[in-house]
Image 1: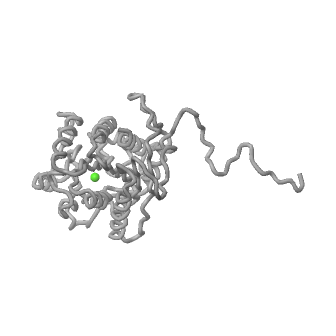
Image 2 (image 1 turned 120 degrees about the vertical axis):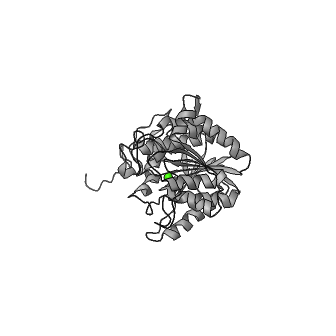
Length: 318
Ligand code: CA
């Protein structure tokens, strides 16, 4: 009709994706609010999309986006506990912008951003979305400066204690750097899921010399992961100020987490990872967690991002 202008649409909505909405179901991404000054939350989330210094080719820098997307396909209701966690306030602080070439500058940006987030004292606990494992160095440094002595429980197939002479600071060196800079003490570092034929003797020896508490997959098979986590929490709590969980998704078997740069057999099951993170997160001293080494470009049907999203639920909904 000539001269006629339509003011609204019956079905089209340019502002919203046409996603099916069930009135009784809350998806986790609906619960997460973008942080604005003055907001208070229970859990704060920040993205650290950095993977240029990865030893193997990695697009783990895309993981914060894919993990957030995966949070759109899970709900806030735990049937096992018959509890809906939609009332837990979760704030998203966004992603730290990367400098395209300056790795040192990126470490500063990450530490500064994590520090600013925790200094704002808006949340009780925090989740850092990597990135490769290199992001744990600036992130744990920020927590140490704010809170004091930090105990770290690391889920990982690898020690990440490589020397810095061969390649500088990479995703293979974060815990070496933390120990050498005396940001974390050897006895305060716990490594769970260390796998055969994925490490070098020099680094296992270094871990022993430093007093790191190392649990191999053999230990996990023999003792069970829950008793290991319980014993280490009890020990750490006697002398640290806070506990930081560092979850490298390659601790999980390639069957459950195919989207990591360094996949392999003989790792944890998805269930072992979820139940152990849940049991650790219930401890009031556990204030932070990072999730690293998810590379969406290598993933299959977002399996690894989905598992990472479930790790986040186990941490958030205690
Ligand atoms: Ca690692």
